Length: 85
Image: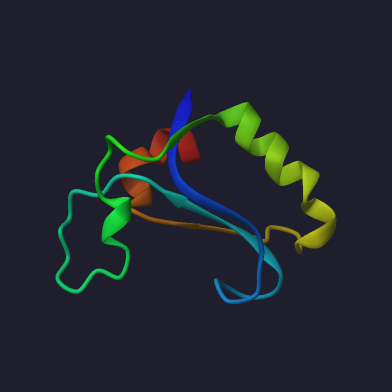
């Protein structure tokens, strides 16, 4: 299984409590007015990541993030719920 990823940030204090990694998924069909990240909407762009590859990347930075310090943003994460689970 794969995820379409817009961006990955290995360390952030601005995207949730504590030190965390951030994954912005690619793809959103909601069309919310004033969306702050419209570049993450089209599913045809972004980078395809294998679940194991992405998990490995997060494991490689776990010494720099807090336990359960991962933020999933978008795009719309629920449009890729099976891969995120």
